[in-house]
Amino acid sequence: MRAFVYEFATARGVGRDPNDIEHGLFLEGRAMRNALVADLAAAGHAVTTSPEPGERTDDEPAFRELAGACEVAFVIAPETGGWLFERSRLAAELGARVIGPSLDAIRLCGSKSALAHHWHEAGVRAPRTGRFGAKWDTFPAVLKPDHGAGSQDTYLVNSPADVSAAHFEFHAAGVHDDEMAFTEFVPGRAASVAFLCGPRQCVPLAPAFQNLSADGRFHYEGGELPIPPDLDARAIALGRAATDCVPGLCGYVGVDLVLDDAEDGSCDCAIEINPRLTTSYTGLRALADFNLADALLRVALGEAIPEPRWKPGRVTFSANGSAAFAHRS
Image 1 (cartoon, rainbow, N blue to C red):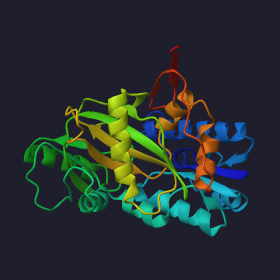
Image 2 (cartoon, helix red, strand yellow):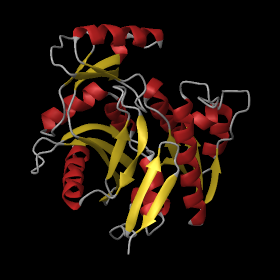
Image 3 (cartoon, rainbow, N blue to C red):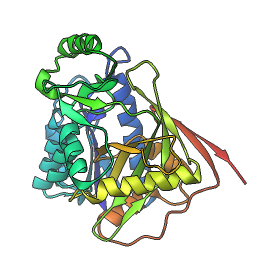
Image 4 (tube, rainbow, N blue to C red):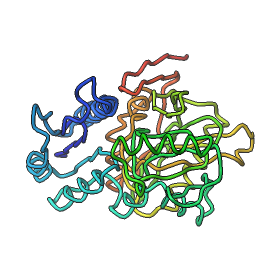
């Protein structure tokens, strides 16, 4: 098929300079783009991607040209600023079949507070979450953008004084009060599980541990997989519950989780849904004994695929997409 892969940071030059605060997003975006393009090409698809911009940052003309000439489009963009929503909408308007969630699903998953409320109504375990400005008296908590990606502007707060300090940093970064949200801090092991979603199947992939910075900012530093079998089953079960109640999910969907010490999983919590490709793709493709991008495309288009096969071994991967595979016989 003629496939167009759009990745926001590389297409617009966001964080390209190593001195930029968003340089990590650029590295993650480039790694995801390159991995997906390579896998689609290896499966025999004709792939184009947005050129890196040089000095310009207006990528819309190239986007219109490339999306309008393809059959399917993969949009990798942050929820921040509505970019994932707008680029998915535009690709569909140009006639491409977007391999991703519906616009309603993107809108719901893009808001931390709206998704948490939706989960609570559906009976999915998730931390208490509320918009900044509402009364909040639960500490420790996490203060972060309600629409955000990549752990940008995320702070662990243990007291009202910490909130005031984080609030100052938000304003310095240009984040307004109505764009901020509180989330109850949940102790445990950070993990994620991705699904290939389509009209006939929702296929779980191997769950991974997430490595987050220990400085109270929760910066994503990569991950490792597979995880122990008991935690694997718990992650998939909670991930299914978190995604089953959200209509319109399609394509690659990542669910961030916290797995508690309780062996029965009764205190595990769903944290957020990433309705797009995530950096864990780079680790999963190293462990997969199949072409992950081709499987993603087939499921999204309504085909049924067999249960994924995984190589015997262990993969560790960094936020910039480098992966190390250790074979296990």
